[in-house]
Image 1 (cartoon, rainbow, N blue to C red):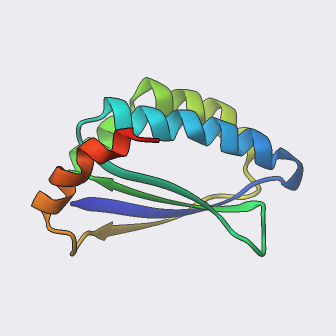
Image 2: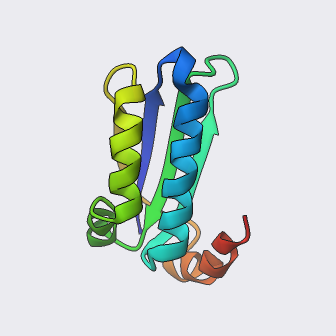
Length: 112
């Protein structure tokens, strides 16, 4: 599986707007993209304007499809102006759970 870890700093007065925008992208990715197996949004407890995204996709092609999905394009339009600097992205391959394990977990992503 293909995964990414992204760190995004947001303008301090735009935190709530950013969180709201992320909900739509996370919901769309997990609900509408068969190749998305994880979409987590975390907020730094010491720097509340810093966020971490952890996403898992079947492969890089599924991630590239995510970048063209309507919910991502809507998120990018709203969220990008809220950034404070450029995001930092780390690309990874998952080791555990197995690919089959990720596949079996997919249905549980729809219980928000």
